[in-house]
Length: 334
Image (cartoon, rainbow, N blue to C red):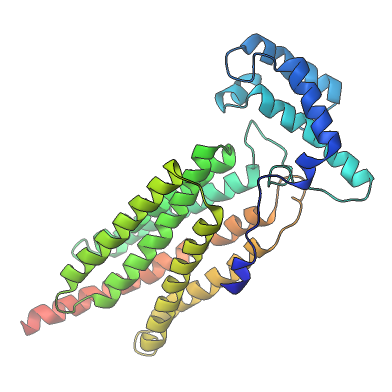
């Protein structure tokens, strides 16, 4: 937690977009090409700029269809920023300064209008992993088993989170950024809720406690979503609460694993999952220019988390079947 708290930093501007070369190029581009077309109104002017600017700058990084870019809401000003970025990057490299960030992001080559192709692909892999494993879960676990519905709710929340992650990496705008943050936070919160409900399983008044805790977490998520959308998108606070709830989740499951791993061998899958989650999170501490202008540390983190869904669902399958056996034994005793 201490390490992660040192990571957040201001990303309102970066060295690349603050450089004089980028600023001069951007102002010249906007003045010559985007007068009256910064919005989506002047398609003809934008269309001419789209073709002429590539010839002028000699850029080979972006040959996608004009119509795809327009569909993804790449405005004339966005195009100016994108095309002015590459000559600036080349200048930084030739001056041996090194690749710099622009508006808080590394420079990425677009592919068919997709802003971060690798992170988009790996987000889809995570989404597919949950879909595949929930189908396996339904084959191996009876609908009458405890936590059968809970696991489906978990899958739905994870799928929507990875869907928003995919959309955000396709096109980074304020709305998709907020939905990506809230989607990730919803996964963390539901994992904490899942843990507490699992701990309370088969105890007296467990349903009442679960309902109260679920309502508390639900109201907090709604409040956080409201303040994020309509008050302020506080990156530091968002990072802090994700780390806090994530730490509670991992610590709680770790203690649970230590308590039961000798009596229930399948619990080792949960422990392995927690260890791998902690290990893969180290990718978020790395920060380097994207390899081949596509693959950065964040994309590698998404790639590393894709196989973890398999391990977690295997644990959930075994745990639900174990609880089904417990439920049957309690019914016999009753």
